[in-house]
Image 1 (cartoon, rainbow, N blue to C red):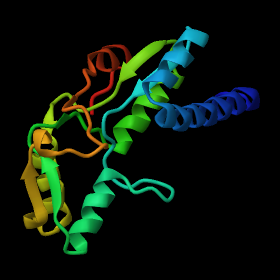
Image 2: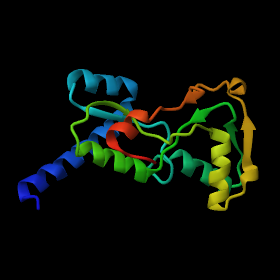
Image 3: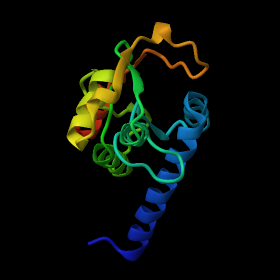
Image 4: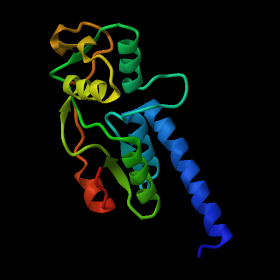
Length: 168
């Protein structure tokens, strides 16, 4: 049974990890690179798309689509945009496993299968019992907005599966 000091250290490591995750999410790849350059023994987790409910004022992608559909709005999602989404439970499991092992470097955590954003959101809408007819197929080439994203933001999570022994 762990002593009180070991438990305190685990709690501290857990909260430090959560704070780091939030900061890196805000900074993106430059933040990841800065952490790894400054602390070569650090572990950084990169995710492409986290499913489900979020925390705070900003809605997640899942919540934004659900709110739009509930409000009778249409949502244009690209058929040529690929992601490897991850559920919050799998992401938490990966972070906990990282806390318990000496692994360092960049870890991609996502589903092992690529999915088109449009097809994935259709499945989510059906699962939530929402009208999937409000989800309209589109192509990135037709989108001229400043918020254009990379078409392929799929992650290869092989290292996380091998070294952390995790499966989504």
